[in-house]
Length: 72
Image (cartoon, rainbow, N blue to C red; front, side, top):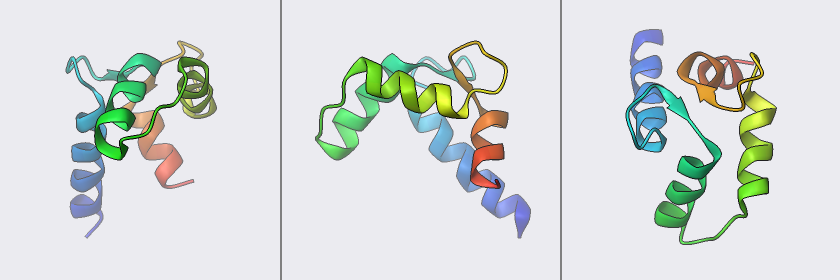
């Protein structure tokens, strides 16, 4: 069951990782929110969300950081 949940979480993460480099930037997050939700958030709002999940200080979100937040 955990594998199914992790696989689903990876698919969600990959939807936000527009360039496929394994990291979600504030710019990528902002673009996907606009596309999926039809709402606009500022780059600083997007960066604040990324920073809240970023544990290594690179100002990007890796799948591991995303997964940790999902299980936190």
